[in-house]
Image 1: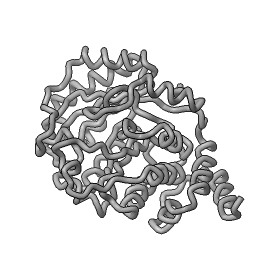
Image 2: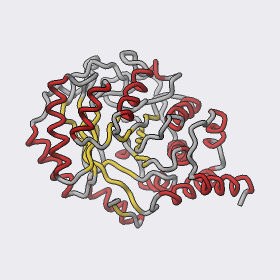
Image 3: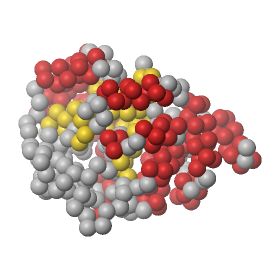
Image 4: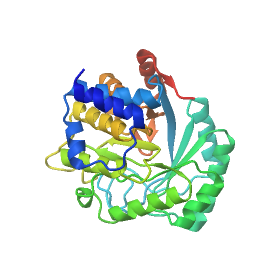
Length: 332
């Protein structure tokens, strides 16, 4: 084994690998390591904190679809773009609980509820809190993504029993303005602070394949890894191009090579060793081999079910066949 890698692995074992002072130069060096060295380091750290044969299973339901006033360039639910998604009202409580029961029966341990809002109104938050209480009563972990929150709203969600709140930073501070103009990067960080202060676990990650540079992926991970407390859950999404959105209508499209995607997963694992790293959107177009490499690089969570809000996701049977093939099982 390379002496430097041996030293780094020993240091990670000694201190748990928890750091909040990663420099971009350090992260760039990690991202560009020889692939076998990078995967070895990520897998070594992964095994210090998790069973490498276990995958946390979540189900994501859109409880309020479409009509969002934000202009996120990737989003099918933005009112700014002409997509096939039409605005719907907030779902009824009984319908949400029926979906949660089905998710639990299908093997999910966490039920995530997403609403296409810039921020929730208080009357809407009352209804979401009822959903959280109902889902939690079924024995599932609860997660919500509702847009920006005030401190008071975060505390109300905590009181209802919310376990996780998702609010992604999406990309680097440098590239953010090319993707979203209706909400600032600091707005996102402020919501993360309110969620953390309320005692709710943070779910926060980003999207790759949006035309960003390697340095932008470095900047995104630097932001996440240098938060005062690492997010408990870190979703890494591959862009799903939705017809009618600016990122699908680009004259010159720039995605990301599968190996570079795996590298991003590995660096997230190394820098946030105790976080669950979720292989999120985009799995529908990933080969089994790419997904297997992501698990080897430290990903240990997936969304389960045929749809992620409005975009396609592998069906349950396909996922179970892959996990069986890899000798992996759902996390209890």
